[in-house]
Image (cartoon, rainbow, N blue to C red):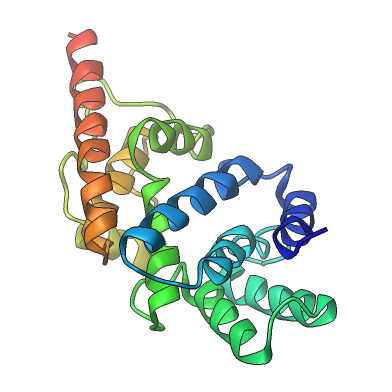
Length: 215
């Protein structure tokens, strides 16, 4: 069994029952990072693939979602060392990307930026809409008269302000979609931005159609 299959099997076992961050999400992020890495001339596709496959393994074990990057980094380091799949230097690069992938203002390095962009891309488009409503299934879908959401076209920093106060995007699930759309602003690479633009437009058209159908 090659190293990718070993990592894939490990990740799939951990994440197969997660909601919105399940194995299918990891599979899409792996595809995204390979597209971006190739276009951006990042030569270590094996490191990129490993980081994508392992980036969310901390979710089932973290006390809060915000801690899952750090928890996943620890688990990934132990796993990769135990299996001897990469050199220590390579492991540190992979682990760094996992540790900070969900902390947009922390960390650095080419692999981290690729992983973040690949992860954000899966917040956008049709898949992003599906994931968004799944993740906020416990909230009312929308408010009458505000079908597009209270946070329609809001900038990402406005959502950041709410999160710092311990608040959700709003009291309605539709604003999770508005939040995810705003994450386009956090993309670093030219390739990811190019791939994301039509996905963002699709999300906007979807919410406009929802608004039209409720009038």
